[in-house]
Image (cartoon, rainbow, N blue to C red; front, side, top):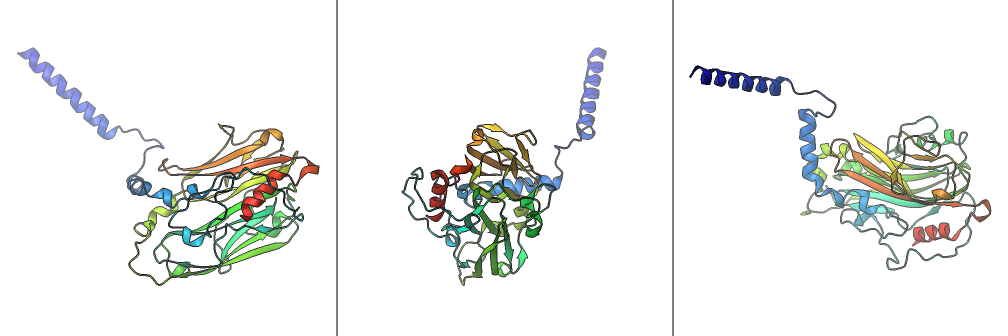
Amino acid sequence: MMYVRMSLSWYICVLLLVLVVLTYGRPRNTRYLGREHLLLRERLLQHHNLLPRLLPRQQHYHPYHTPRRTSDTSQLTRTERGRSRSRRAHVSLPSRPRGAVTWGARCSPKRAKVRPNSDVSLECEVLVPDGSVLLWKKDGMPVHFIQEYPGDVLSNSIRPSLYMDQYVGSHGTVHMSTRVYIDCANEEHEGLYTLEVHTPNGKQSKRNFTVTLAESAGHSVGMFCYDLAIVPYIPRIYEYARAHGAIIGQEIILPCKVQGNNHTVSWYFQNRQLPQNSPSFQIHANGNLLIRELNLDHRGVFSCQTMSTIVPELTDIAFTTVYPVLPQEEETNEINQSLENLSA
């Protein structure tokens, strides 16, 4: 009987010790999220099933891929022409003057009416010389906050004249895609939006977009109107290159600019993740990829992927096709085909 009592007492002591360890001995590490982060994670996951219709993942254009339209952004983007044409057909187009800027048909209309409380985006594609800087403004003020990093010339878009003394580009051609997100549209989003292109030769080209609210009633509100607090935590790529043609031996930069807090940026090529810094590549702090010396081995599709560090399920991805060419072959059929896709 005494043996049974001692065994029971010992069992109770062990149980109490386990409870104390579980209560006060929880390991404190960087992966443990506080209550606020857990609540935010729950809210993000609640929206996760609806996010693909807004996030630009479905709207990032691979050179040979026709994007699917979403109901939220179709009102701001012109309908694509020639959707059934093969994207692989090479065409011959007139040579473009060096330093010229060509605006694409995949641009939002210059005057756009937006339903109140809807989630939409202004977007535009443009063919520019390498080393150009793209800058969105609303009523004369920059839309995106650009953090400048040493050696990253594309981040100097707040002061376009500065980078021209540091970097002249690779004399290549870049097919750029850029956008501005408007979440839960209201009166504050009305105004004149301007996309400026500053080229390495000091020239400037721009396109204006006027956004006004449409008088509408009875429409469902945008998903972010229910909880605007989650918007800053959603990683979204707002600027990248669809295609980049450059001369072999040159140094080039593939842009991948992301908005959103608590995210990471990774680059992939030939089914492998690229290191942050290597003899061939360097990933800049703002997500852009530097290719130190372009060669034929770099021909192909590079992908930039951003991921939320709070909810890993929230990701965005963009694809860039790189075309290394010899100096005497700068105007190749493949670069011309990218121009054809842009103008379609």
